[in-house]
Image 1 (spheres, rainbow, N blue to C red):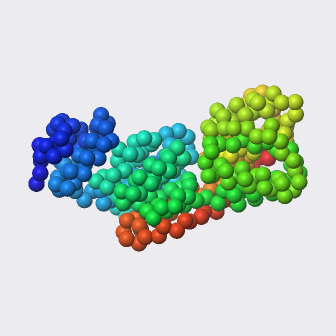
Image 2 (tube, one colour):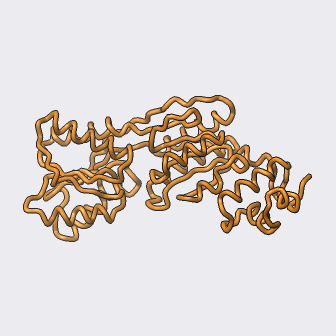
Image 3 (tube, rainbow, N blue to C red):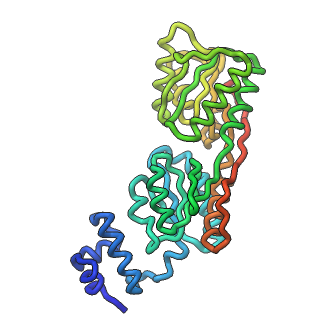
Length: 315
């Protein structure tokens, strides 16, 4: 069996560099890391405490490094299924993904991070690693998407709000993701179908975080007229808006109603009307789909998960 010295010789790097790679140190460039790991695998090198087959039951879950509340139920679902099948999770955020998403380390990847560029996902899939995406549809032979029915869920919400007498709407967008596009498109479609006008001045830009909801609320309060309701593309922005309104004596929902999307844990306690997404089940199904693919039961058809409105005191 090969040793570190031979791996270093074939890789054209020092033995200390090989050691850093094998011990997952962060001070090695991506190209060098991949080269060392590939050669180590080809030489059937076994690092202390590591099996050459360990990659066969390790999967990555990659998510954004902010707003961790949103991801907790998804991670719980993935982990529960993975444990049933004796798989290990490697949790990554941001750029860490490319350090570990190589065949020598893992056998599958689940993507929840909207900041991850499509080209990165395609690069991973091209390496022969199956990928499950939860935030977008991406046509590739090695990528399966599990998508929330954002459009239908938002339609149900807006239809009922109009039925309840709301006519003057404001909308707070999140980042320019497929989820956000579908939610905003449903919002505009329903208003148009009911001949309810919507001004560009009532559209606000956010970034999914509560601070951008607070900023939108501040801008609304500076306007000459107050909309009847602020529809937010996610719960965190809605929560930030409610906090800012209430700090300034604006009563929710008496002076202005607010609603969100996702139904994160805190939304229940704050009484936020929202569209509920079954995130635990989404994570469980993602883990199940990925491990089935790894086992040779390939199914790369897009799956859709339903969402339903939760009516609470904020509307």
